[in-house]
Image (cartoon, rainbow, N blue to C red; front, top):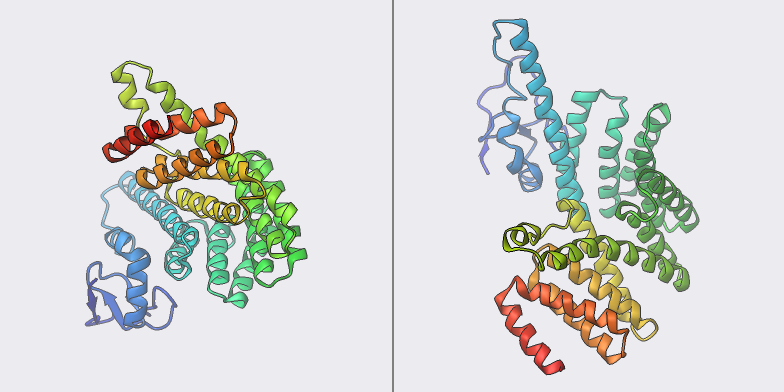
Length: 376
């Protein structure tokens, strides 16, 4: 990270900190177009997002070159717009991934960048600003800054109210964050109301069995868990598990079928892919990991659900190429299914998964071979 004090400031130009918008005293020595109030904010921004976008900011924050024709000017403006839209999505996804990993402080600078670029591209009153407001609200909730979260959510609500073209996805995200806010304030009645609305709008946009809707079920389950209404929490956790199991099993079945095909087709179809981007993978790890922890504490009550969540998390880790973790979880599921004299087809499906995991890793292949010989 480059830390340099600006030597001179153009007359009349006010420099503002990238993180807090206070008067700036420092400049990034690598791009020379990004300013900070102190070294702490410079380091926070660098760790969050600036390292990834440092050089991308230069053409956006320097004077446009002289163009010889209107066509060149139009092309230049279009390129500038595309760069800003790229940065909107990049900063948004980075902030989102931090949130799913529980790194609330790190997510803030990236979310602020996404918000500022959205304002530049769409204007102050556009509904396109709402996703960034919601990221900042969620980060604030995670940091315990409830008043700040309420301010961001109020801005998001006001923007949605003024918009005539707000999608069901935006409504879903807004209610989701309001649900998180009221959960943090322990106002569970309001939390349930907003999370139920989240489920409704997410179902309208994606369908009731979609993984994007599953987070709404998961958050509602967490509320009932806090209220010690375990039967309802249990049923919602089961719903989430079923959705993710069905989604991930599609990828597993495709690979199992591919193993029977010629080698040239096999090589392509055996490539691991969750079908998710990095933030979605982080979200899946968090959601399914939480449910697995819940099941392991209540394993004696519903062992069949423990087996299913173990298998689901194993499939996720396999598709993410975390092969040792995938093998460990799948083996636990298999042993538990044998111990309970579980359905023969389910035991066979778990054995297929173990073989698939082992086929990607010589270490797990040897362990799997030994394990199979022992089990027989």
